[in-house]
Image (cartoon, helix red, strand yellow):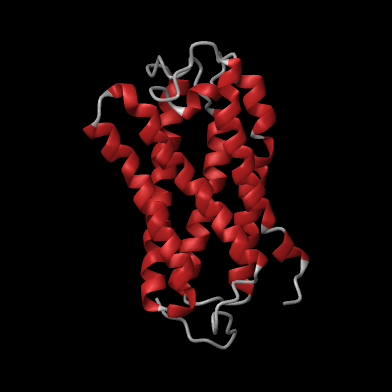
Length: 222
């Protein structure tokens, strides 16, 4: 295909995943005593965390790349009328989720590595998390249903199902296993959304080139 700039920007989603993974893997090196099996990823970026500076360095492209990638994906599917209105709505909501996550967690970072959830800062952090989770679940469900109804976007639908399954493994695992394993299952949830960003980036890079997906004259199906 003849790729345009907007398609190349899809690679930002893949680079964002690499940036996030690097931050999760290497930031604990600057946090003495950090237990990745027990503690949340957000503890690494807390205001008081000794790893905050390294986290900001390693995750710099993740925070920007995720938003840029999903916004471009939303613009592309909107202009090209990719698949159905339901599919595009799923992409839009997933894009909004990334924007809420990027802005919300910057404004309301944990102040004390997750140990004190009594203050306003921590309460707002949890409120942002609730919005992010809700938008993620709704958007992924819409993409799954769209994939079932329209074989042209079945690929993104299958990946959405995989992302949702990983996301749900987080709370299920946290409830079923002792607190010392909290960090393991929390990472299933966090990586699910970041991973789907990369998936959308790849599809954008390839112009969502599934047979018949791009049809400007296609009737709206919701």
